[in-house]
Length: 378
Image 1 (cartoon, rainbow, N blue to C red):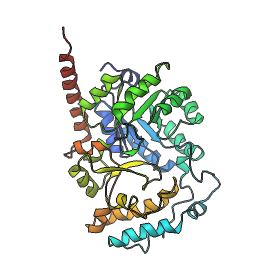
Image 2: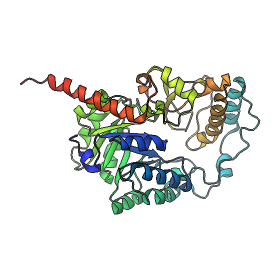
Image 3: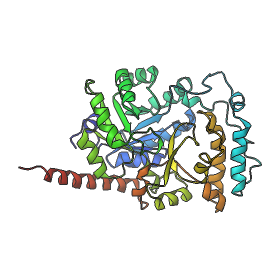
Image 4: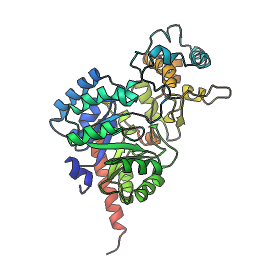
C-alpha cells in the first residue's frame, strides 16, 4: 500500500493492533500489519519473556510496545510504599466494593488479603518505567507508544538512539499540538468510541480536527483509532487524511485473545450501545462493557471513583476474583464481569483468528476504496 507508515516500517498494510496478548501481536505482524504489545501490566522480567517470544515468532518483522506514563498521577511520590498508598483508600470505597460483591453472592473474606507489591504503580511513572524501557529497547521493537500524556524525554532520547519511532495516544486537538511540539512521530488519534482510556470527541470529528491542527508540523503521521473494526471504517479515516488505523477492541474476540470466555461471550452478544465510559475501573474515564460493576459506580449514593492509581487498588483484586469465579460458572460473578472494549463491539459478531481479521480488513478496505473511486467522474 502507498502509505508513509508502510514505507517507514516495511509493512504491507497500515493496520496497527494494540493487544495485551503476545499471540495477537505476533499474528498481526506476520499477517502484514503491525502488532503492538500493551506492556503496562508487565514487570521487566515478564516483559523480557514476552518480547523474547515475539522476536522468535516474527523473525525480524516490526512490532511495537505501548506504555502508560501519565503526566498527572495521584500519589506519584516514588518514595511511597504500597502500604502508604493503600492507606489513602477510604473505607467507604472498600465497603462499596465488598457490599456489591456480597449482593452477587461473592465471598469477600479474602478480598484484601494479598497486597499489591511495593512496586505497584511504578510502570505508570517515568522513574519506574525506566526498567521496563530497558527491556523494550533491548529487543527489536520498531515503535514505542506512550498511552497517557506526552512521552517523557528519556523515551525520546532512547528511541532516537535506536531508530525507534515514538507514538502517543491523542484524544483532543490540544493533545495533538503538545505531542507534535515535543517531537512525536505518530499520533494515535483516538475518539470516544474507543475501548480503555478515551476522551469525549468522536473519531469522525477528531481526525480532521487533529489533522488541521498539525498542518505546520512535518513528518508527523496520524493513526485513526476509536470504534474501528472493519476495513471500510479504516478507508473512511484514510480518506480524511489518516495514514492508517490503530485497533484494540477487535482483537478481544479473536481465538488468540487473553479475554476470558465469559467476557468474550458477552462481547460477541453485545450491541454498540452496551458499553459505558466510566472511572470505576482505573480512576480515569475508560470505556468498557456495561455490567453490574459499572452500574454500581453510577448509582445514586455511590462514592466518587478515586484518582489513579487508587481506584485500581480496589478494582483490581475485585475484578481478579470476579473473573476467576465467572469461569467456574458463578452466576453473580458472570453478571459483574466486564472488560475494556469500544463501541465497535457491536460489529464483533464471530470468533476468528487474528490473521483472518487482518485479511478481512484488507478485503473490506479494497472494496471500500473501489466504491469511493467510483464516485469520482472521468
